[in-house]
Picture: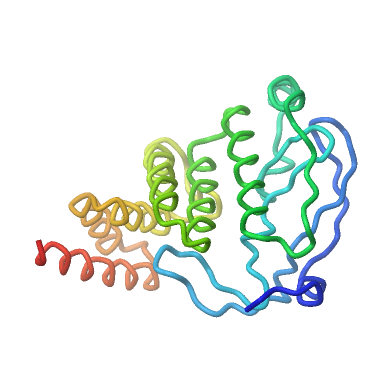
Length: 230
């Protein structure tokens, strides 16, 4: 579905924010989840909504200092992190003008700013993996499969470290959901044996939801078919 200003207006709020890094005030478009209709979930767990994909509107960028983060993390910045951002990001930042009808290229620019900020501020591995997942989704939707694979691999690196070091939920994901993303992205990397190990862990875990277990069984069948074809 092609986005129009009318369809975006129905699904977003123009909300005011105060940046906890520089104290500047700015406005950003925030998705109103109640105005979206869930359609389906892709095999890599990217959710499909109508009429607007919230993936395009999930990063907040302060136009004054360049501090950028996913909506869920934007207010979670310490004074020490703020000082690092003002020293390392603000002097190099040039304000952007994003359109009301966000394009994939504009969303990608925002996600890259969020990733750079997260790295510089020393964010947890789970957050880095989650941002890389969203970047991977954007690249796939743009038809850039090689870049999709690059960021799928980066997401795995973050998630595997988070799985061992951090408490769940991680970025609102439970253990099975994060594990499935690792399994799927390892499949994308053609690391089939590793992917199968993660899939088996999910299927045998009594705490895994039936939805994630079913997706894991489907992925397992696809991998086994790939291995038989070798």
